[in-house]
Amino acid sequence: MSVKLYREPELKRPIMLCGWSGIANVGLAAVNTMRRLMRAEEFGQIEPLGYFDPTQVVIANGLIEDLRFPTTRFFSHRRQDRDLVFVIGEQQPEDPEKAYEMAGEVLDVAQNRDLEAVCLLGEVPYYLQGAPWPYPKASIAVLEVLGSLLRVPLDLSGLHDSAARVEANIDQVLETLAGAEELPERVREEMDSLRHPHHVDLGPITEAEKHEMLDHLDELFRGEVGNES
Image (cartoon, rainbow, N blue to C red; front, side, top):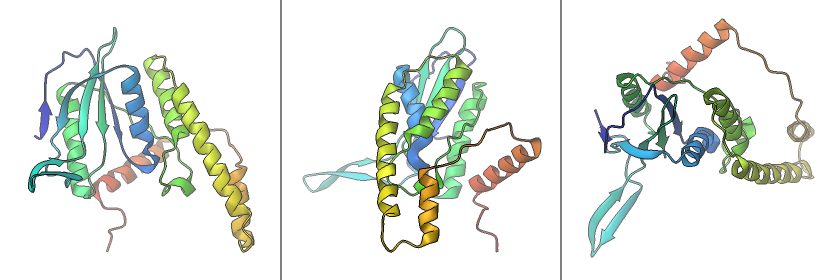
């Protein structure tokens, strides 16, 4: 077990909320924002050695003085009814096996302390999945659901301001692409559809869809997708 606890908080029927970096940093931004707003206190971390390579090296007088690794930290917040535990991961292991192992570390902490967990996904437009900026709009959607489920009022004004700036940048990029003289007509039509999306009413998923998604997620964690021979 590579979990290091600075203290063992006394928790009452706790709920765990986990956020890692990923596509547009949706989960990380959502959970970290909630952690900051609730002023949760740090109580432990997952030891990074074995999961990550160092991202920084501190050298003094020609000698290596320190190695800096991405952190995965645990925070807790006391509430009247149910306490909260936040897991903030700056980075995910690149090796699928190590990512699966780290997920097991977190789930062990949750299971040993009877913590409940649920997976919330914030949708990101497919054309932004490789973009070098976050997508606060999806983080807001996740936090609105969390706030409602946990009955926690959250001031999301800062995220709304960030979302407005990001949306303005996206509109500018799409406008520039749509105005390109040599853009093929098919691509131009696609750009126009992205600038003026058609919204649909959402509904609950079926049991078959739920099991299909769970099976697919399990395959992703095990690194089986795309590796079939």
